[in-house]
Length: 381
Ligand SMILES: Cc1cc2nc3c(=O)[nH]c(=O)nc-3n(C[C@H](O)[C@H](O)[C@H](O)COP(=O)(O)OP(=O)(O)OC[C@H]3O[C@@H](n4cnc5c(N)ncnc54)[C@H](O)[C@@H]3O)c2cc1C
Picture 1 (spheres, rainbow, N blue to C red):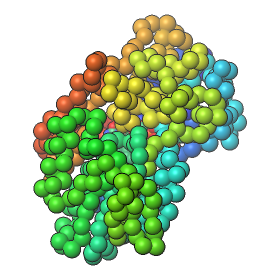
Picture 2: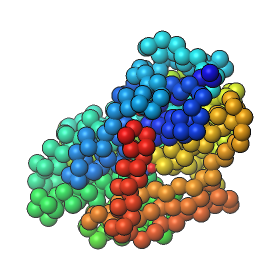
Picture 3: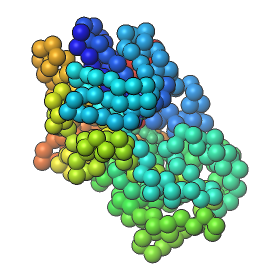
Picture 4: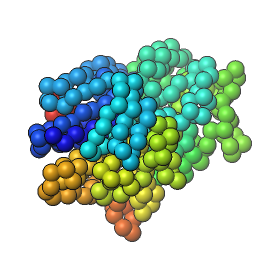
């Protein structure tokens, strides 16, 4: 029986495991992850916004066993891509095909910047209780969300977060005394979706009195003075600072010689195959160039890529048709009041990505909820 080893049980790895298990029971599938659970990134923001506790959107990876996927909770310590061998705390795993779906870590330099009083990593689930406590006790000063550099996961998420924070402060009745701001090194809110979409999002911030500091790259954080200094020479004070670190590839990938000049794994954009025979890579640990930059780091792409890579792995091992990643993506932009807009289109189109922003409505909010429910049920139900 041919052995497929998937490393990483996030969006990409789970979509691949599901695809392989549903279509190819003759393959032996093993999935390795240091965590024993999965939740979607946006579930963290629902927790922060007070919509729903994170635990309600969390599922155990042990549920994979019921689906005929062997799950091993372990740390991946080394990868020999040429030999398709993975070393872990639980021993070595040899594969006939290997799928790398290790996601991204938070850039260590940015995490260090946030080692200051009142400062937190907005994307760190472990920081949620402290962030909620700060937002529920702040009575004056400024809550500042700062994008610290790129690429960062899910481009709309920091803006969704600042809107949710505004809402939380309004519910507490302190919004008139607490300023809310967001800083980004980029010239506009959503470069990946274009100027019109960026203006649309900026207008929502403006309507709620949220200050947008564009072209503001953070240089340092002075914890004692609770001040953020920007490279353009300006600085602002904060009572609560929620930083969004850039994404970096997990160090094990560089050690294994799998990363390219981008710092990430650089598979073929359509087949997701790396330069190593029967070794594929998907999701946030990869860099996929587009006509205007790079594919955003988002779960929707990781999942579609995971399914494509799984079909190609099956074709290599068993024969049959190969698949190609079409570059289509549908990202959610959640606005207050249970409204969602879609940033949608062909991100790999030439000569430029064909991406549009739809209007926001409650029906799309329900589709976002269904997106989560359907995948959690299919992958880990
Ligand atoms: C606040 C927030 C909101 C978001 N909202 C959205 C959204 O609305 N829509 C959207 O599409 N995306 C969203 N995202 C982005 C999305 O979560 C990521 O892009 C997605 O998780 C990437 O999938 P992946 O499979 O590449 O990696 P991951 O889902 O991160 O999975 C990687 C897995 O690899 C494991 N791993 C890593 N290193 C090792 C190791 N050495 N040994 C063992 N295991 C290891 C990790 O434990 C993890 O389980 C959001 C992200 C955040 C932070």
